Image (cartoon, rainbow, N blue to C red):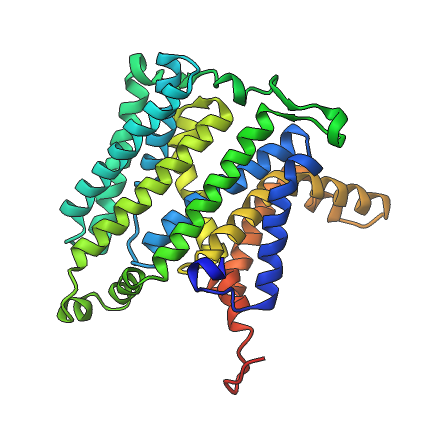
Length: 360
């Protein structure tokens, strides 16, 4: 990442954490072949790219957009509708991408040109209105999107779980179409994150940060702020739509709950804040921590509750009951925001600086 972007993690602990996350994701299908573990690993990959694209807006330009799930949904529905209508072929996959990505970019361009000239709060409200309208539209156009039921579809034969690419006898584990789909998702998400890292560390990215710090000063220096903000909005939309397409390929389904729900937007915001705004590395850390907690905190609490009950400790078994996992998840996020106001990545990077200003 440092070689390609020129932006090192600047923290030994952060470097180790990133290496551990990426290495675990790289070997997840081989070490954790179960369905749940594979789903969790895939979701981390997809949301890392999705959160990174949103960080380009929120962390590097200061623009608060609520339309990011709309672009994510466009990518999902583009793949789903194409494969549902044309059948499980690679031509359908290419057609879905060829329709979804330009549509997402054009919508982002329109939103940017018409709303990025106004104050930040009005931009946020406009994006919220557009995203809500798109959600209603997707739910109502049953003939196209499947309505509330969404669209299920089949994948090309090469990506199906029943397609064995490498038999189990060779390495002790079988490589099938599902494994290949995972590595397509992993490689595509890694490429998108690396591309965004390169963008934010380019002269264009420096201008975005200048606009975030003081838009009027950037305009006084001669930068066309609306152009830069609109371009960043289009770029973020393309990455979000690509992440949505990958999500649809993995789930073999696209629907309002999995692609356009406002709860997805809230999850993205939480991941950005937890990982650290304006860092890009925070997208990987935030997505990994959030999704792991979302999927395994309840199981850990069940073990802790049983251990407390066996030890005869009062109150703790009830407080740690797995039914209360959402409460503890919320408390963990409040604590992370309180103790890491700049996010985990920001805190780890700041930890390298001593109070006197010298570096460890």
